[in-house]
Length: 231
Image (cartoon, rainbow, N blue to C red; front, side):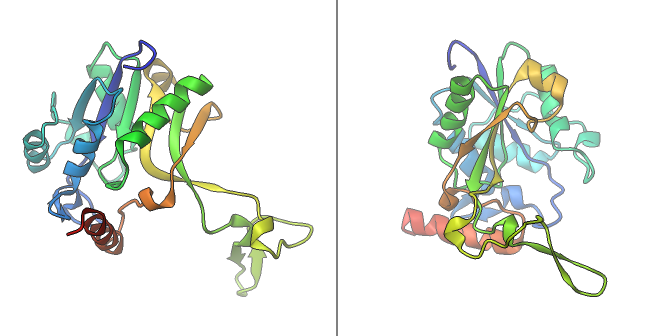
């Protein structure tokens, strides 16, 4: 609970990953990937209830083994490759009542810590915003990005009167890191998105912002986690 508001956290994990097959239950530094998110969420000082949304029997079994509640099995039509990421969240908040804020935690961010979850919630309440998402400062600036014409001629992605040549002169830019999404439940039912002009941001360091989408991502996070744990 935060500011007398009850917090529901949802771990969304489907079984049909294509980039890294079965990644949510694959071993990372000695535990199934999803276990890292469950354990961190349970350390949050504000989360009142932690649940899993999944259609996959094996993911459900492992989540329960690590102490995550599974109040329902996600309908398979909400676990397809083309299912929007917001749909399982809307399904969950429609089926579980009595909460004011929802937190989405994806298993693919194993390096986030409880302070990141709590910081996102604190930022939402302090700014009185409708939603808050975690971001990290980008190493690659869109001011130095280009598209290519049919004739392979570079064209600036962002038009500039004069090209910025020094990195220290570039405006700071931030990218979503996928680690934490927070919103007021009644608001997200209407907006059907965490990302609108009413969304604030919580800045996380790059060292905790890795999001697993490929085999290389998985191997790198496994190495980082083992290094952190000294194993």
